[in-house]
Structures are given as structure tokens and as C-alpha cells.
Image (cartoon, rainbow, N blue to C red; front, side, top):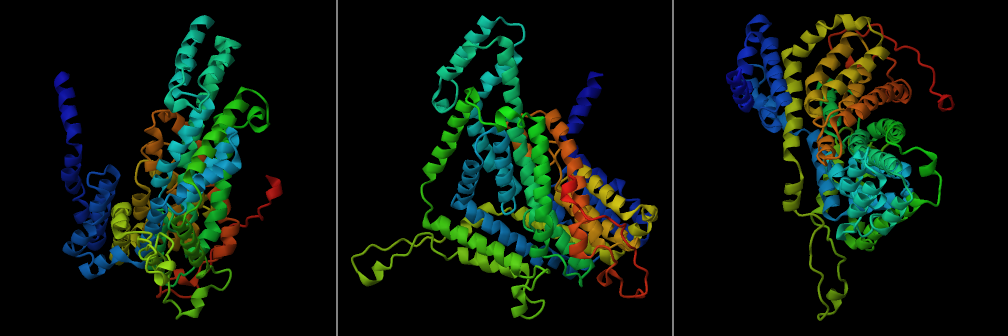
Amino acid sequence: METISTFAKKLWCVKKQLILFLTPLILLPLLFGLPEKEGKCLYVVLLMAVFWCTEALPLAVTAMLPVCLFPTMGILPSKKVCPQYFLDTNFLFLSGLVMASAIEEWGLHRRIALKVLKIVGVKPAWLILGMMITSAFLSMWLSNTATTAMMLPIANAILESLFGDLATLKENCKVKDETEGELLSRVKLHALPSEKQILSIDGPDRMERSDGSTAEEIRTESEYQMKVWKGFLICIPYAASIGGTATLTGTAPNLILIGQLKSYFPECDLINFGSWFAFAFPLMVFFLILGWLWISFLYGGLNTRLCVKKQDERAQAEAKAEAVIDEDYRKLGPINFAEGAIAFFFILFAVLLFTRDPKFVTGWSTFFNKGYVSDATTGVIIVSILFFFPSQKPSLSWWFDSRAPNTPYVPLLSWKKAQECVPWNIILLLGGGFAMAKGCEESGLAAWIGAYLQPIAQVPPAVAVMFITAFLACFTEFASNTATIIIFLPVIAELAMFVKVNPLYFMIPATTGCSFAFMLPVSTPPNSIAFASGHLLVKDMVKTGFVMNILGILSVSLAMNTWGRAMFSLETYPDWARPVNMSSTVTDIQLPSVPPFNLTSL
């Protein structure tokens, strides 16, 4: 038995090498049991899917496999594969990453976060909302990971001011049978103020409060405070994942949708930065509110003592937490020239992207040749300015007075800083997704798989939307959201064409659902960062995330069947989705009639 255990441990140590060696061998029958070109492409797709899901190779290295496998296996020539790695969609993503690195360089994101927290106040229910609003907004422009990493230290500082030292809190939660005197002595021992906790409620205030409380009351209060602490920590990664869905540059799956739409349906021009924002931002806000209500309910943020002003111990703690936020904001000082410049270009970046061609009104792109200016053009123009615009106000007196000191010239962003901050591996990952989609299309694999999805044609499209969203939300709990959407979006596009439903009706929910990974620490980097704090348990994330997934699925379904239908004409099968050799007389499949959404019915 011991020998078997030792052997199993050795196998586990070399699991990645075994996956790299065995997976190509196990998949070999596909090359002989399926049509030649489809079988070869399926072999590459499944090979990449296994490597992506297990991370046997770095994600970016797996993404480059089409460059060597597609040409050598006769699936696609190299001159068609390589350009997929730097489409205009990749440039749009790159411009968003560069803008985010400039914002982080000058600390504008921290100023925004603290300002929002000052506005919402420090009562836990509203502070959780403030954390979620700030995380979601920043995640629309920064990476989800950077947003979470920046917000968690702020949250911990505020929590220590509200509830004191976490170690003391955990000890108090474990007290059951101790006498009150033993408990008070231990509370007082832990309540000695430290340099780190000058602004926290540990110290004399804590001891005075303990003197009038029983052991059971202190334990109950400590358990409640621990619940609120967990709610603070768990809301940040969740809000970051939700916020990333609101803009095309907020998360990689959104850009993969654009790239694959251009590949499969070149004549479809319905999705761009402006139209996506008009659709996804209300969805994000709606889901964020639902998520706030659920997290606040689950972790004790919603109750009269926290939402109604009372003069008690908690009010004193809240006042001290407010002092922490005010002090941190005061330390930032007034907005300097660099922050103001970054804020201006950031707003200009968003406004120009939104107004280029928002579909519901005429955009500024009509001043140029039709089809020449894309979102990538806009993004690159703005971020290029950051590399030469000065970070300090130029000295005009220097030109007229030879004795006047000259302001040193330092641009808002250096290329060295951009290289350090931009995750280039994600650029390659996007390219690998576009190359895989191109291979599936050219080889006929997507159409071949779609032909086997005939049973799904019997399912009402509205039900299929919920099923697709739920399936991908569950799958992405165990795999990268980028890899998940790369693998499944071509199949979903073929499914939509097979059942004669507007492809956007299936592809948009699939894309959004890939960002709803809330249940496991390994699902997303933001979840991992929050879990690594050591204050959350896996069961906390599973319990909270399961309901969050359900709320997300219902929110997407609502959005698709209300304002999404009107924006993208989802009730009809569009001409741009018809194969060129198909007769134009194909009967349209109508989506089920959905009554207008009435807010008063909620």
C-alpha cells in the first residue's frame, strides 16, 4: 500500500510532463476515425483545450501551437495563421492595457477609489456597495487582477479600523465555555494598541466595551464582525469580474467575440465599443445591485443597526474608519498636473470610443472613409500621445528668462513602464483564439460539429440562452475564461446558424457567461488573490458564488430578451449570417414573444 502511495505521489509530481506526452497519443484516433481535415483540426483544438485547462504549458505557449500545427498538418497555410495574432482587435486591447498602465503609474485609480468611499460613507452595507462600485468601475478599464490587488489593502485598512485586529476577532469567535473573566483578560491582552492599529478600535475603547458584555455577547458580536469582514473581501473580486463585462477592453472574452464575429460574419458591424457599452453597462449595473443585495444579506451588511444612524460602539468605530479614509485621501494631496492630464486623456479615450459608431446615433467615424477607422485606430491615437505628453506643467517663463529654471521633461508614460505593465501573454492568447477560430472555419470543423447539434434545435431559443450561459459559467470555474470562450464560441456560432437564430442571441450570453466565475478560488486571478488573504474558506466562495452564478444567468437572460432584442434586432435571422450560397428565401425563426420588462413589477 505504501509503495502504491509513493508511486502515486511521484506520478503527481510529473503530471504536467505526463499530460504533454500522453495527450497527443490518446487523441491520435481522431486523425483516422473522422473526415481528414475536420479530424486534424479537432485534434489540434482538443490538444490545445487540454493544455489550456491543465496549464501543462504556459497559456501563451499553447496559444502559439496553431502557428506550427495548422501548416504542418495541412489545415491552414502559415500566411493565414500568423496574421490572426495581431488583428485590429488586439490593438484595441493593447491600447486599453497601455492606458491602464498610465493610470496605475500616476495613482489615479487610488484617488478614484478613496473618493468613492468617502462619498458612500463607512456603514458596512454602504461601504460594501462603495467597494463594489469602485472595483467594477476600475475593472472596466484596468485588468480585473490589478483592480483586486489595489482594492484589497484599502479594504483591510478600513476593516481594521471598524473591527480591530483580525487575530483577536478570530480568537473571540472560538470562545465557548470559558468564564467571562478569562475571556476579558484575553481580550484585554490582545487589545493592547500597536503601531499598526493606532486608528483602530483596539485599546481602551475596546476594553470599556468588553467590561459591560458577557462572553456570549462578545462571541456573537465577533462572529458577526467576521461575517462582515468576509463580505468585504469577497465582494471585491466579484465586482471586478462583473465590471469587466461592461466594456470591450474590460476582459479578453469580449474582444474574442469581436474577432470571431469578424471572422465568421464579416458583414456584421453591430458590435463595437459604443454599442457593446450601451448593452452591457445596464446589465453590469443591474447584476452589481443584485450581487450587492445578496452579499450584504449573506454577510450581515443589511440591517437597521448598520443602515440607520445610532450612537453606539459601532458608530465610534465607523467614525475612526472614516478618519482612515480621510487621512489616506489627504495624503494624496491635490490633483497634480500628471493626474489631471491622465484623467483628461482617459475621459477622451472613453468618449471617442463610445461615440465612434454607437449605432443608435450617428458617430464621428462618418467624417472618414467608410470602414477605414476602427476602435483600434482611436485607441492607438490616444495612447500614443501619452508617450510624449509632459507629466509636469511646462515652464513658459524659461523661454523668456534665461535665468528661469527649466521644468524637466518626463512623459506621462515611458515605453519601459508599458513593457513592464502590459501582459503580453494575453495578446498571444487572444491571437491563438482567433487562429483556432479561423482553423475551425476553414477546415469545416465548426460546421461538422454543428450538424450533430440537431437535438438542440428543438429547445426554445430563450431556454437555450440560459443553458449556454449556465454551461459556460460552470466550465469557466475550472478553466481560463479566455480559453473557454475560444473553445466554445465557434461551436455556438454554428449552432445558431443551424437552428436559424440570430447568432448574437447565443454568442453574447456565452461571452458574458465566461466572466461569471465566482465559486472557486482557482476560477479567476481575482478570486485567488482574495482567497490568498487567508480569511476566506472555499465553502464561503462556493456558497456565495453559486447564487451569484444564478443571478448572473437570470440577468443575462433578462438583458437579451429586453433591451438586447431591440438593440441588435434579435427577433429575426439577419442577412449577414446567411451563407453566400444559401437562398434568401429561408424562413426566419422568430424568438418567443417576451413581454416588456416592467420595473414596477420587481
